[in-house]
Amino acid sequence: MTLRVGLIGAGGVGRKRAAAVREDPRTDLQVVCDRVEARAREVAAASSFAAAGKIAAAEPRILAAWEEVVASTDVDLIIVSTTHDMLATISTAALQAGKHVLCEKPLGRTVEEAQRATGAAAESGCVLHAGYNHRFHPAMQALHQIVGSGQLGDLLNLRGRYGHGGRPGYEREWRADASISGGGELLDQGAHLIDLSLWLLGAVEEVNGRVQTAFWDIAPVEDNAFALLTMTGGQTASLHVSWTQWRNLFSLELFGRDGYAQVEGLGGSYGEQRLTLGHRRAAGGAPEESSQVFAGVDRSWNAEWDAFVRAIDGESTLAAKGISAVETLDCIGAIYRSAATAGSPVSILTTGESA
Picture 1 (cartoon, rainbow, N blue to C red):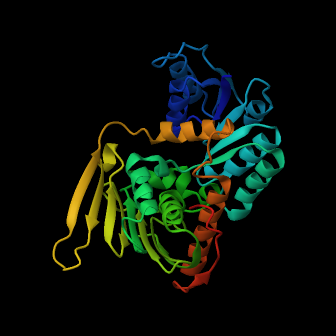
Picture 2 (picture 1 turned 90 degrees about the horizontal axis):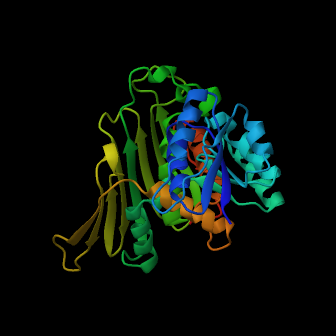
């Protein structure tokens, strides 16, 4: 049976989600909704062209209000890729209407917002997936398998860096408005690094954090954030995210007693994705090192979409369930509280269900 999809939010991320729907023979885009009608029409027009191995579908219809999408009887599942202030509201309403939901990260501005959505999912029995596509990059999937295999030995610590340089006019965009975004770079790219840390290392018991508005005229929203996560297993994750990186950068390093692994790049403007694996020599000296490059276009959106559809069909367990987003937001809230007290430690206890 073909799953019928409604898309709410046709911006940059929404376009990537729509492309994944179009390329999947199991799904068809039925409805597109965006506050800018021209954006919705552009996505709808692109979705009417047949992808390889798929029969061309009728052009999706355009609806002006997200409530109309939620109420549509010809929609089985909904993608929510709006600004942060509407993510939880729309997702909760869609789940209550009996629709499966893929909601873009971070699922809400606060833990409380995200919990409304996860509660609605539990009550409805529908699938709620938080859109953390970085888990689905091939290098990240390979790293997760390496961790699971024990090749690195007992894990010691993680170091993550992620950033870009913003752009002129950034202060006028919605991300600079705290009432809409809920936060700055910590809630933007920082959410990805925190999600990956939980996925790889498990539960968090304490955080320390600092945030600063170093360059962009966006205060009180931060353009840099620094965090230390202390895991229940004793490891530490050291994270820095920045809108003053100037050169797009992604780097995640994971160290164990027997070796280390590093993922660099995400494809596109972040550079080719490379996984480097090193093994410590017992006698000391330079480690044995090997690298693998994952070339080609970014297929993480398609891989994530496949996992979501298979979860709806009961064929898989999602790698980024709603609870994962709640735990990431819990960490983010604690980092902000720590930053407000000059980096003092804040105790929390996530469940480890993100791993």
